[in-house]
Structures are given as structure tokens and as C-alpha cells.
Image (tube, rainbow, N blue to C red; front, side, top):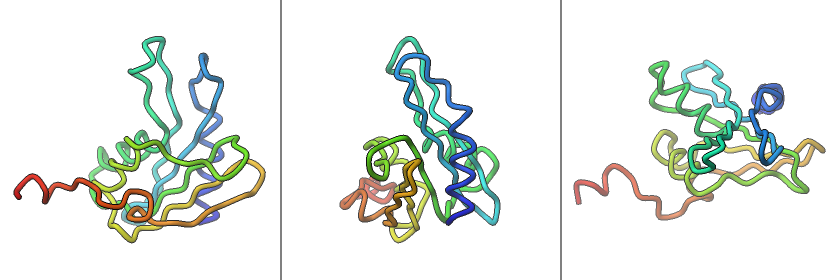
Length: 129
């Protein structure tokens, strides 16, 4: 996971955050490949996109619909925590037990899983209920 954290840290520097100035980087491992993303803001705040979803969507756009692991990093007091929308997208493209590493710039990390971040997730199987 150290390699994923470092990839996320490097991508964080590419964040476009002229409004919040809060840079976040993410990296996912899918099919042996690493995909990265950074948060991108917009003057119409609702159109901003989180680093986690950018990285996940990059993997999916490349044909990887099953992501094995994700690392996220930001300049927070403790390990950064993904928003609800990112947790839902993780649940769509990652197994419940998939590895999630949350980190900050000071070296603090938390290791968890998709299921621990979003218990009771709404999944595609729920659409056929």
C-alpha cells in the first residue's frame, strides 16, 4: 500500500482547487495497474469532483470494472475520510472486503475496507429486488 499512498501523494499536487485550496490525491490498484486522480473544483461548486471518484472512474474508463485497493491522502489532522458519494462509488466497483488506506501528509494512516466505510451499501443487486 505504500506505493499507492505515494502515487496518491504525487497526484495530489495536480489538484485544481482555486476555491477551497484543499488538495486531495487518490490512487487505485485494478488488474495490476495503478490509476490516479486528484480533486477538481468548479466555480459551480456542485460540479466539483473528488479525487477518489476521478481515480475510480479512470480505472473503469480503462476497462477495469473491479478495483482491488484504494489509497487517499490529504492535508488533514488525521487520516482523510472519503465523502459519502465516494464511498458509494467504491461499493460499486470494489468488493466489500477490498483494502482502503486513508492517509495524511504527516504519515498517519488508517487501513479499513469498503464495507466498514459504507455498511448496508445500496448495490446493483438491490435494483432487482
